[in-house]
Image: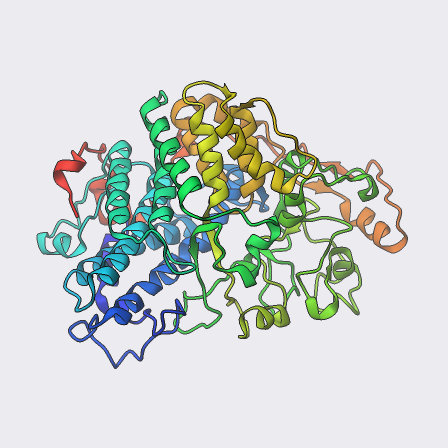
Length: 573
């Protein structure tokens, strides 16, 4: 834990990332114009002081959350990554950056929240902004406890510094950390308006997160808590019925830059294509797109790809001709590029993006791209988190992208998730239900993307489990489903992970090129799924990531057994 970097939480750093407009989350005031004593003098400045919590402190976590959420879970293949092979250790750079980022979010949220208490502004705006701080703080802790298990609680950075406790903060039992998150969200809901401006967190956004927290905590003791499941269902249903939010009609529209602040998304990181200050921008296209996908020379993600196991879940078999493929689920194409796919929302200045033409027309259409060879070892490439080329960016936002910098929002909690939380929680301790409201919630999500879906008479836990995977694949969430499952049925989680097809294909480049060139798709003995790489050694301990080594060196008490804290009697807002 980056308590040694607690100075990073100071107001000076905060103000340097603030914004100057209610409409923009990112434009910032001149750094020599304001200081702590003369800022927060009106409603506008309060909003400005919170804006950057929607981006900059999250940057390093965003760079790694695909590796945890998707590679660890078996949704994404990334070569010899330790997240693929379950060999992550405390010296892993992505792990260190993720931890640092989450603690930075907490520290910044604490600092801004406390400063807002004495702001010279209306109570309405002060409450709104304080509620946003607490909602982001709760989200940071939700990631922390699901990633690392027991972690310290840093309730007030100034108090920690004053008491000199930051070298000896002890880890708190995970069940108590969940209670702290619930306490924090309850206060956030008190403060937040029922309806906020587009893209901003409101009461129902916080309530949706609270429903997810209760669902996750429900198994923390080893046996699922019916009380927690009832709470998850209650809060999820309130969001569904009363928030005024709806699922977008078309699934792929959720992830388009024109819809950065769409009503389906409850929590989103809102980025800017600017690079000053560094960390305000989205860099995921660089990490996930094929070489040459944009004009900035900053894409290197083509060698990764959606796992064969995720392809199986969508009903895809790349050893069969694309002409035989029947895509019954619209989410497949919106998640992974496959032979035959053309995207009208990428490269709109060129008539759309043709996946195979980009790869194999190396001297024309794909000039500067993969140079005539398939990069992906699994035969699939990413779609989510991509904005397209420079023209697409300018058409959507009116501004240019830059090297490793774009303005596509990253959605981390959606209304569809709340629907599926409700469907699962409404089952209670059973493994299936005929409850009409639970079935309606499940069917609303599935029928949006599967035109042939019919409303079932009952749904099972397995139905919802699979639907969650298809609906939120590549959104950094799947691993955390396994974490919550491991709380009360670790063996089931272990067995499923060890049975996945997490390895690569051999020889697909030849058949892809043939298909592009003459329309035939000849699979021979050279095209095989790799069964030689060993099955990862998944154990109960695999569901808790190691704390960064440097944090343990700085604060050795982090190696002690976690302590119990009476959250309600110890902390308040």
